Image (cartoon, rainbow, N blue to C red; front, top):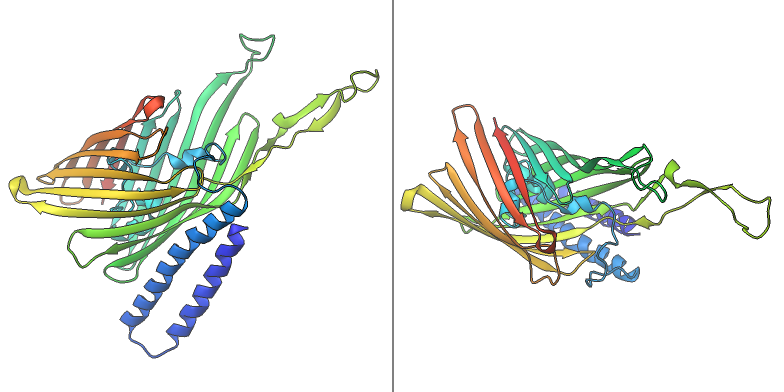
Length: 376
């Protein structure tokens, strides 16, 4: 199992770090050593995981669409990131970083709260709530809740096409706790552990996963690099009283009918995703504006590799205009053009950011994302 391989890597790296820690060295040298070890972990982990997927016949060759559970984990949090085409792993710097790259919350100072809502396809709704708080200059902690689902639906069966009088609903959610550490003034590492639950009527499936990531600010001012691994965890399998039924195993002979059975569904892995991104922000002399350019390379376990690109133009630190393109070079994908904007209202004690994003999903039409961000 991939989880066992990950645990072995953690033990090896921890043992190596303990050895380095006991050697005479300055504190900065120790931090750099740990940063290097964490970097190795982030690079090795996706390779091991991908190797495991190939061994099981689930390599990312574009033939595995629909073979993973908890697809709502792939939607994306925050209107700002969505307007930029999801090219956000290297510029994560707010409470939505817990989704894109948990190392990004290391840049948060004070307390920050973000609320995001998306009117998703087929009358479903996607919501994300996150809160982050700095603990000194080195540590940051956070919590997040992701919800996706649809309201009550009429139960229809053969013979009762207008409804049986019953209703059902479908709801998915994930609850996560995040932690980030600024190992140096340029390198940060973060982790988000989450509990996942999917429910439809009286059946449900649960799972656990972690997201890990790192963020590096290069010597060139404004240039950043980031990478993350999302949804590395257990498989999920539906169970519940909706799977209990009564059948006739022998329709020829009488007297053997309505035998109680409990159907067993298959188990499916999570949509694991490796992201690597680069971003560059430059100050422009006109109107005290800033231009941010970002690009992400994505390698999922249930589809082919693709690229996200995004732009953000901020004027007077008050108005932001954004555009992006998701899933570039991915054939028959649901990605496309996105754009949006934001308004920044600043005061001496609190900053309020109101964001909007329009997202083109190709053959699945388009959706709208709204977000509010409070910084104390």
